[in-house]
Amino acid sequence: MEGGILSPAELQALLLSLRVAIVAVVVDLPFAFCAALLLARGSFRGKWLVDGIIHLPLVLPPVALGYLLLILFGTRAPIGSFLLAWFGFRFVFSWTGAALASAILTFPFQVRAIRLSLEAQEVGLSEAAGTLGATPLDRLFSLHLPLALPGVVAGAITAFAACLGEFGAIITFVSNIPGETRTIPLAIYTAIQTPGGENAAARLAALSIALALTGLVLADIVTRRMRAAFR
Image (tube, rainbow, N blue to C red; front, side, top):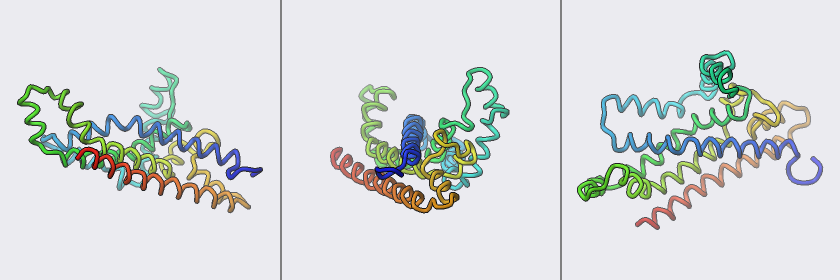
């Protein structure tokens, strides 16, 4: 490392981690809101199964998820070969695959936070809006979404912080390729395996802790302020 706090390779891992996390959270957000709204307001047969599937990534070993993604989106896998042949697009061994793995693993964080915000809303508000002629779409954008905003923001920040720490699914699905899939956790792993890499591992570990703690604290602050603003 010549000057600066991070070496070029470490800075590259940081920027890649931020890129993966941002894409994962942004792509997840609309699906997470719809899933949360379905679980909070919907009443249908098999709801418990849908709820379990959505939250499965919380208890599923990340390596197992990475393996499942590999057999589905690998270049010779059913979905992966189709995407590659028809669109020239591949997830495996690419940063987009890291974003996909991170998005799936952190999806429940967003769903849970948004669902709690939706369930905290008075059901009578939606019913009253309906009696006044508001369509379901009107209620979605003028009632449910604004009131759920604290949960949306908190879930997004928490998921973002969790994305920055994902390791098992990423290394299993897209490997550990410098500049392409080597995020901060993978860079820490690489430094530990490299003779004399203890200092780099310590720097990256400290950076990971700082980012995770910042994300958690920020999520709490934003949630409190937004809830106070909506009272």
